[in-house]
Length: 145
Image 1: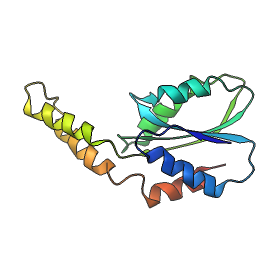
Image 2 (image 1 turned 90 degrees about the horizontal axis):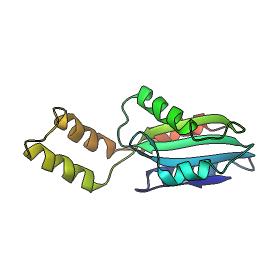
Image 3 (image 1 turned 180 degrees about the horizontal axis):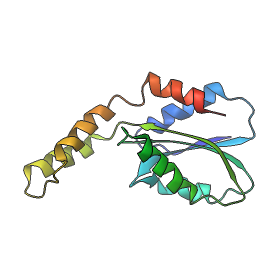
Image 4 (image 1 turned 45 degrees about the vertical axis):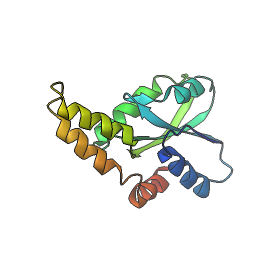
């Protein structure tokens, strides 16, 4: 079974790759976009309904140069999963963000409230536009169970 929650199409791309590479599995593949360091509320609500299942988690995050960050997200998502379930694998990669994020960053940069790391945030936005890419999809294929 494959279910995913995608706001900008990034997680949908990952779901399509899983669909092409997995046949007749007893694993539930659950995809999500990241919201404030955790899965989206819809994904978390769905995960809470699962019991006695094998689950593979996959998701995208706008910030993504760090595997440690991805691990923190997966660990946070796991907190919402009932202990009768088994997480059999996971995959995370960076994903492009909506233009509204860039506009917010640019407005902040012009204000007196700009965070010290605003230039890094803007740089990360542009880096994220390239994801998920073919390398991300190949890494996903290697990770799926």
